[in-house]
Length: 60
Image (cartoon, rainbow, N blue to C red; front, side, top):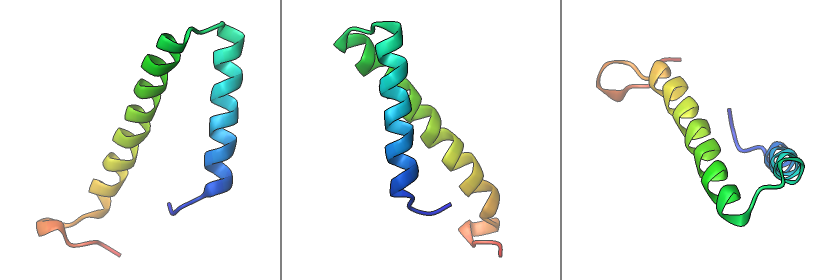
């Protein structure tokens, strides 16, 4: 994947809708948002690591 600003905006809008539907407090939004971003980062790293070969060489 690459940088996708439209996808990021859509994701953020969807998260805001969920927060509103759940009537989250600002504290809950911070906790849940942090968790969601951490999961996204972990997913990205898992995929990136699979593309790396021995010694960190990118496999194409």
